[in-house]
Image (cartoon, rainbow, N blue to C red):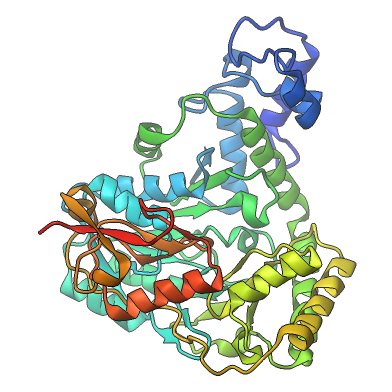
Length: 483
């Protein structure tokens, strides 16, 4: 067999070969190449249904790959500059949780920023690890959490020399990056692993002039949402490993929670997308940045809005910025980010990534067209003219540092009682409260409920944020510890 290179896509190639064989299926899935569910086949197409197949010898097995999946993993690792790569069909949530489950057992400490994605705190609940939070600095004008300060990380290491790992969000949803290389050097000097939630940084590996990647910075693991900026199907991601990680044990950890019935639609999308970026990523992301920079310049010309970029860099908690991100501060036009988000969708048929109390994020990718960018710019200008008002009475505080009263695991599994939201001040929360996206908890299990947090939740609900995480879907009541 010829030596593999980045022009190959082993899983995709095996599926194409398999489809030509016209095998008669007496295995699952039960739709039997779509014949058993014609409505679904008409909706998704025969080509899609024909490759929604079960694991078998010609197609390898994700839980224990020995052929085409193994080859595809090798090519992915090479493309990302990693020692090993795993295909993840449970999204980056599964990758984040596998990293933490690899590094920590019950009672082990892990240093992390509090503005982590819910998946990281879920992993803390599952493992029984103990989080040591480094509360991020906050830009009070924009109301957003920033990266991890090196000095704060160093202090957390000195205060917790027995911690097993440090987790870093890089970049944040808004595009903020920490000094990842310095944090990695600090952690390794104290015998700690570095785990990077790089969900929003796929493009760093393939473009030019982007912030440093986790693998280039020497991190031990990174979870990469290939489906975000990499072009693969939703729910498909990579877990990357450095040279000091035992990849055989990591696979065992992954197999604790990942499905044994991996979707070949997701696997092939990862394989094809990796090939595409490895061969043409530089040009793809140069075009993406060009569109984002143009949009940023035009939006700032409107007045009122602030589309921010590298001018925020301070050398520490904002060590770098992802210029492909179009993050826009909206409060000066008298509208919360979520209000602009809703207006764009309801009045202009434009769906952006998310809106929170003070900001919106429009995700720019190579799939966008110049005329789409122009439409977004025009809509924002019209929203300011039609709906803009005074900034007075707008809540400006976006990120609230929590008071941790109990470990997430103990709080989540403890006996609890339900109280009306207004009666929960001073209680310890036993569930999550968050706006989704971005999925960063306002409250996590084990945290003290304060009047400030109650005000924030009520304001976010009033403005139309999509609130999730609670047992009560209306967020009228919260579960608290029954102490």
